[in-house]
Image: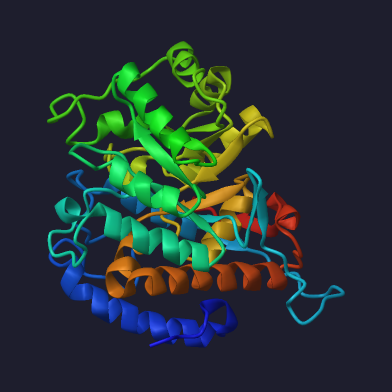
Length: 358
């Protein structure tokens, strides 16, 4: 059955079809995920830390930031609100990306996807339909990096593979594979060293790298590279020293430590340290277009969303991904309209209030 593009639907229509997506997803997400109405990590079994403290904090701290109204200005019918982002030779409809997830059957044993290629296909196709793009994963196992990367190549390389912190020669080989796929940039997951299956007592070994080591590793490519897992100004400055094009401010969705700061708590500090010298992407508890707005107001250039995309992909494959992304875009557009912001550059710190609870 052919359905109309999500971009031509109104907000209520998108939400109504998303309800069907969530209903479809529940049996496939069980038993680790209940497809809660609010994905706040409070009852989530997808977080491997004992108390899910960092994941919960990511969400809660975002809710302690509020947006100021500014509705007296010369405006139009809403079509003048421009959420577009120009990056790496491409123009995207919004500063929103889907996160990198691999080994879908390990974190989601009831999945209906045959494997990582099929799962990645749903994500990338849905993001493409919505005018945005996604990241692809790297983890243990045969094909865990190459199969999603093959899918990314079939989508013209419009996306970013996230390479784990393996031995330098392994990373270099995966960089060459990414180049062959024609990707627009290469990600490197520096905080993966804290994941349960990759940490000090994990089944596979990953290694922290110095700024000098990272600079040497990525010297083999002309592709821009992005370091994911930066949570301090000091770390951001090291990324700059390594020659990174950008960073992802991330605590790996709260998966690597139980008691880290929320990503939104460290965003301003990092922005003040590096200014416009690095592109700042951020993840962590982003569930609504207004959450994207808040992150942009505090200095981020774009946002990465993780677990919700697993749910909507299970619920209706590419269509679910397209609908969810359109929901985020509508909500961002509405927040911009209600605060007098015509473009992303207009979203500044004075448009939000950080409450006393923060």
